[in-house]
Length: 102
Image (cartoon, rainbow, N blue to C red; front, side, top):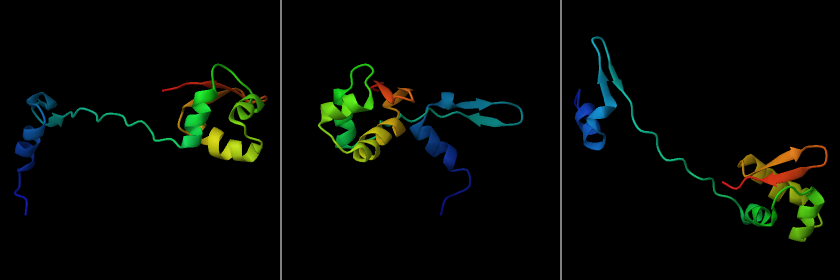
């Protein structure tokens, strides 16, 4: 079982004392943020990113990927890439895309 007050010495083993700010009535602990993790993407999204350069419409991208099925393209390539923030639609009506490779 843990002992009361054992947390601070263990924190000091992992973090610098600069993480602690003392005042008359409280203690503020500020810890460095963890590194941001890049999302894993599917092979389909990787293929999509590899063929986009500048703005292209849906049909141009599908042609470069040799894809005929629009729903397959939308569900397995386009939507996941947008959800991961890798591409964005620039003109919604015509479904133009620009690549924002992170």
